Length: 516
Picture 1 (tube, helix red, strand yellow):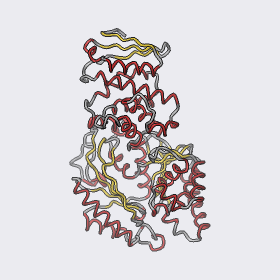
Picture 2 (tube, helix red, strand yellow):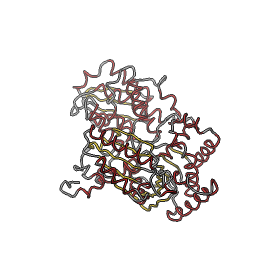
Picture 3 (tube, one colour):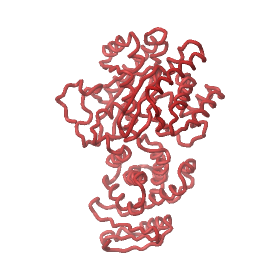
């Protein structure tokens, strides 16, 4: 995009192009305010353009939509709290040196009769312009947020807010049909007729949505705070060892089991155990009834929780196609290497060096190998005694898109072995069952290959030699150029032999050029 001369309104809520250079890897700091029916949130994005990091993230539970069904107006207390929050966010933005804040509002503000007055008050008091989006646009932006984390994905995106729930289908990276509904838990709380009346309303609404959306039996992506709270409870029920919500997977069976778990437990005790706010926990019993109905009607083959939604969708909206096509994991790792590694660019050299060990690996595994090589040196500032654990923790808990939980553990284990031969007594033990024995061995081999390759550290343009791997013969050949002979000292040789042992191989070392 090159459009500095184009009118500001052409750039939507941002008022300016975010990606002037289609080849840009870095994202200039961007602040987004999401004025929802239940919460008002500020997110400041920074870092890799294709995989933006959360430089700052703050949420205030305002319940703007509480009582809206009865009064037709925003909750007065919620309105005051929301204005106070946006005042604070504007001052924070000034302190962070942001050009301004981009703000969007959803169901409560668009439906309330005093919504326009609230937006005018915010503009007058803070200078922040709130863009009110309709339900179809909300569904589209949420779906695009999912695409930011899962490029080329397919399935049904289900975004729940306080006053509405949106559905959007995605296919091969494109957003298709989309609908909105009044199935937000704040609205359900106001339905007449008690539990029976609420159940009838939910069922009738979901039947209509099913007719509008048609068959949707692929993956179900869950976007929204109430869904994330349910996922946290599901983790608690299962004693799941990795408390990362993004890409957390559930099934229809687990949703039903968690619904029973919620009904059988004291909500306050459960809230405290799961770290959920009181205002959010009040809505969970209503939200789980909706989720059960969605799963029952659409029968997804699996369910994935997305931490990405409208805010990320706004960024994705402005990305040029060639930037959208990049792998968010690899882009984030490239950015981290450029920022934190001692020799940026060596990650690619290291990848080329270890690649023969994974020549028969599929693309999903190779992208993890590439990511590991890019990250192999970014934690060098950590204390040597804790460097391996730091690498493992960073990989498994980093806010990264395009990374399944099992892949997080694989990547973390590979980076752990980059700095340590043994994994006993580390954080990996609690997560060991998340990957199988074959994957554990491959991660160890990758880590030990990087550990050895890092000993041949030279300028990126130098020839560091190569590995020739013959898996059928279990034979590993190391060929070093003459200028690398001095680098193959005692420590390097010990690390090479550790790699050989992990492969269960015989080895040959040749100094000098070799054809092939």
